[in-house]
Amino acid sequence: MSDLEEYTLFWTIFNPSDAIPIPTENGNIRFDIAEACSFPIYISGEELSEFNQDMSFKMTPLNMVAGALLGCRPPRPYIPSTGPSDLRPLLRDYLEGSFQKLGFDSLEELIFEIARILRERNGCRAAAAALKNSEYLNINFHKILNDLLLCLWNDLPCLPEDKQESGFVEFYKYLRKAKLSELHPESLDWYHYAYAVTLLYFDINQVNHGEEIVDDLNEAIMRNQNETTRKHLLATLSSRNFDFRLL
Image 1: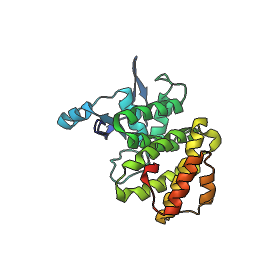
Image 2: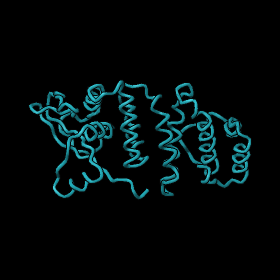
Image 3: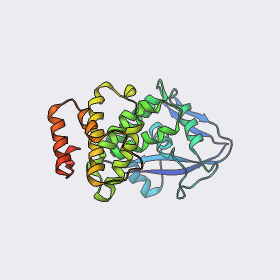
Image 4: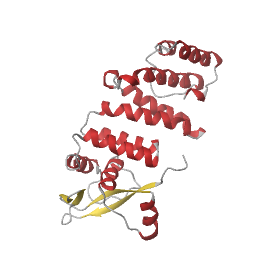
């Protein structure tokens, strides 16, 4: 979508004397740190244009918590790091210390809100990155998987041809983690459909996705209760030609 905003993470350094701010409606709350450390600030849209001109940025609640969530990932060699080599514990503590102060009842609720905003402003890929990183937090990740799977699924048709296979492999990895009892009831039919489509893609394209397929492909197709859907999936299997209109 052309109206999506570009964004970046700007890693800045906070010192113990300054602390890291948690911006709220009533002013900043100190998040104390024991040593100087890098911290990711989310910058998007017009703020990014201003940042590219004069390197100025704002520490709003969204910029701070979205930055912490998007930055909460395994260490990367190209990310500047002052302080601990693995910043995930620090960023996890920051997010856990922020959600109540920002008016949320749980950390999961804050994560869903961040993902919603990122999806609207920056697209499914940005929202998926945030949701994936939430696996490193002290939360019930199975509650997050419903939204993450939908983000990854919606992004599959947008992937360039050379990224499609890795996109399906990643999607399948999270499908296998999902617990049906934790998914939204209205997502169950879609889950069985997406599972069958993914196995179809693997089978037709002979994709090595890193593990044995537990469920027989035909069984996965038959779990779809809609007869028209089943016939379409079986026809695709018979044709040996994956139809991207299934996505």
